[in-house]
Length: 151
Image (cartoon, rainbow, N blue to C red):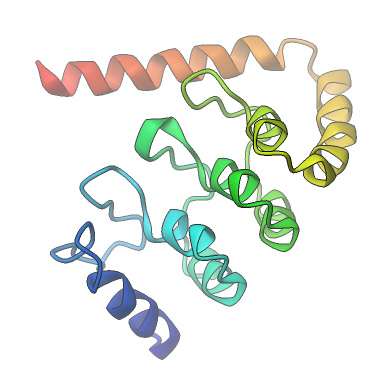
């Protein structure tokens, strides 16, 4: 395993949520469903986010409360990480418990992120007018999958 990834995973193992996580899979989850990428985005660690994405981290993986790493970047107000995630294929229309990353940024007072996301979303909607419907279906499917695991 790459030295940079080993350092990231070592730091994560120091937290209670990731203490016993097997990082043989870069998309391994903590007890709350978050991945290493969610966590380094929360830490505002751009280089760690790049390393994880380069290693195959899923930029659209929903974690705690359905938040993707893009939602977390929007909460944190981190424009550099937000741009990295978008350039890496993050879903602009992913829904957490009903909120898109744009709405999350707005609710957290990060209007500059909304200014960046709005034209990208408008362009995507022009190409696919039903993109919001697909996002809602995806959110509902994730909830069904989660509930089926509990049966």
